[in-house]
Every structure is written in C-alpha cells, then in structure tokens.
Amino acid sequence: MYKFQPIVKTLVWGTESWVLSGVPGNESVVVEGPDAGKKITDIFPGQFPLLIKFIDAHDDLSIQVHPDDELALKRHNCKGKTEMWYIISAGEGAHLLSGLKEQIDAQKYVELVEKGEIVSVLADHKVAPGDVFFLPAGRIHAIGGGCYLAEIQQTSDITYRIYDYGRMGLDGKPRQLHTQEAKDAIDYRVYPDYRTHYVAAPDTSVSLVSCPYFKTELLELTGPFARDLTDCGDFLIAIALEGQTRLVRRSSCPACADEVLTLNPGECALIPGPAFGHSRSGNSADAPSSLSVRPGLSADDHSSFSVRSGVSADDPLPFTAHPGVSADDPLPLSARSGVSADDPLSLSARPGVSADDPLSLSARPGVSADDLRGVCFEPVGSGSKLLTTFVPSTAVCGGSAPE
Image (tube, rainbow, N blue to C red):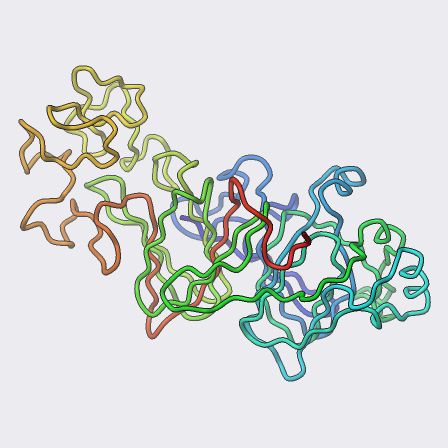
C-alpha cells in the first residue's frame, strides 16, 4: 500500500491538493515506507488513469468544460476528462454550477459568453456536506466559493475556460479564455437532475458513481470493514474524508506481519489489486512475502510454498500437491498427510494459535481469516468516512451521466 506527498497548488480562487497524480510533470511521490521517494510511474508504469484532488474554493472558480476522449485525442493527443465531486464541507451560501437549465445551441452559447451572461442559463445548486455531483465530459460547471470537496477525475489537465468574471490571474493579467474551443465540447442538452442521489448507510459500501472511467463508493465506518479486492483490477484508492483510518492488508506470507497504513483526512492510499500479482505491495519479487516459487528456494524458506514432485517452479501458485488437496484450492490450509502443525509452510489455522501469533492470519471482527485478498478499514476513535474508487473492467455509466 502506498501513501503520497500532496502536491499543493495555489490558484487565484483558492488551493488544490493533488494527492494522487500521474499527470506528466506532476507525478505523485511515495511519502513513507520502503518505497519512499518513488514516483507513481515507478509503481504503475505508463499513464496512471485517475487524478485525485482536494479542492478548497475561497472564491468562485471559472466556468469551464472539458472535452471527451474523442475530442481530446483529436486536439491534444490525450484523454478527455470526466469527473465527480463529493462535498466535504460547505460555508454559508455555498453553491456550485452544473449543467444547463435552459436549452441553447452553439450560436446562442457564443452570444451569451460575449455578453457576459452565460451564468443565466446554468443550473445553480446550493450544496451541503455529503452532496455528490457527477460531471461527464461536456457538462458546463463551476465550483462556487465556500466549497471544500474531493474530486475524482480522469488523468487529464485539459480545461476550456469559458468565463472568468473579468478577474485577473496571480500574475495580474486576465486568464486565457477558450470560448471557441469549448463550443464544440459542450453537451447542450438539459437534464432533469444534476445531483447524484444515494442513501447513506453505516459500515457498508454505498455506491455513488459507476462509469467506464471509475467506480466510487462511500464508506461511513463505526467499526472494522473488510473489502475484498478481487473486483478492483489493478488497484483500489482510499480517500480519507473524516476521522482517522487504519488500513490493514493481511500478509500472504505466514511468517510476515500484516501491512498497516494510517490515513488522515485529506490523504489517500493506493492499494494494489489482483492485477499487481501475488506479491504484497511495495515488495519486489525477491521479498520474503512473495508467493512466487523460484529455483534455489528451499522448502524450509518461510516465504515459499514447498516445491515438491509434480509441481512446476514456474507455476504462479504452486500449492503443495498432497493427497486430498486440490490444486485449485486458493487457500490450501495445512491439513495434509505428512505435514505437521509445526511445518513453517503451513498457514496458521490450528487450535491454540492466537491472533497475535506471527504465523496467524488477521483475526479481526468482520474479517475472514481465510481471505488473503482484501484490506480491512479500521476507524480510529468514534468513526471515519472515506471514498474508495477504482477503474472497473466493465461498468454502466451511472450518477447523472447522459443516457
């Protein structure tokens, strides 16, 4: 698991904290643990697909729109930008703009921008903590002053600024507008509701947004919550909103301690999923927690599963082939002929082995001792609140997405 150094940007309207970024020139750096100092690109080769921000708006942001993938590829040779907002706190009168409230076309849009009246046709929403807005590429929007929110978006820094209230930038000059570029990017349709509605529930995953680019859930915790990672593909991102949370990843190595990371509000963690392979996050293939069985490792090595007759060293999961044990069993506990309870290769599932035994699996409330594929979220104190998000292999666009 990885936590990163925030990249803080001071802007004319407030501040942004980029807590997980693969944007070229703004790559996140691991802040603690054995991989401290590594960039996200060292951990996730290629373009990391999501950008996670905390936005603190002291003043209104510019009215803007983002291109979709097709237009962004054509114009900028990059991805478009679909995003979502979760309101963490809101000052008195806090609001934001999202979508059109009146039907207009491209010609009318240009006329309104030239007259400084584009705000008159935009849907204005008063906001409160817990409000969620999904913003597919093409939707005109602006965050209002007094909003503090978490933003999840595609990795793209392409923004078409439509209107900026005539103010100056930090350099004392007017900020550039992109009236013409935005004209072809805007979705001119009017939708009945631009908010994302959900029913909050404690100690369970509540779905907020599901689209081809990310799937986001809300966790409001009063006690430990186990999250299986088998549906997360490459990774799960945990974004801390309120309270402190301990993340506990159960070790795949019987002799290794669990991996623990603490998140405070305004931080996020990258939790590798099944597509990262069977090694624990942050460890190389030679680390003692690796499951890979390699030539030269003896059956007494605590980090390996014994290579015995009929088991190939190239098998990524070469479980011991003993009578009565299926090779398809993902967790073949040591209940095999000829293997004693003292065998260092056996998984601790024996009477008399406590949860504090270094060879035992994490025995916490609500966490199955047989599940080595997940992460446990443990609130510190009275409770905590987080978002989790990942890139789904298949998803139906949800939230307020157009049909």
